[in-house]
Image (tube, rainbow, N blue to C red):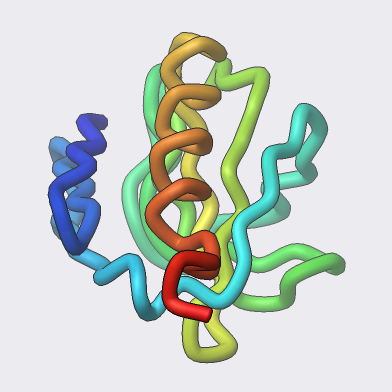
Length: 112
């Protein structure tokens, strides 16, 4: 799984599953979490290393997950009433992605 934070959007490239691109302007909220019940995969790819695709759990209902199986930290993003969860192998990578996306989606106080 590779997450690239560009100027106006971030991209997720994942082996064995569909790549995704999302404009920062589409993100309604972002949360950093260290505990998450992934629930069950309803469509996608799973191995001892990766969990990718459509999942369902009690908290989110149906959502999209791009995560390493042993991820310890996750980003939970909402956009257009849909939920996207990202979990990188290294917790520091997850923190960096969280920081960048948070900065890119923060309200621009300079405009007010």
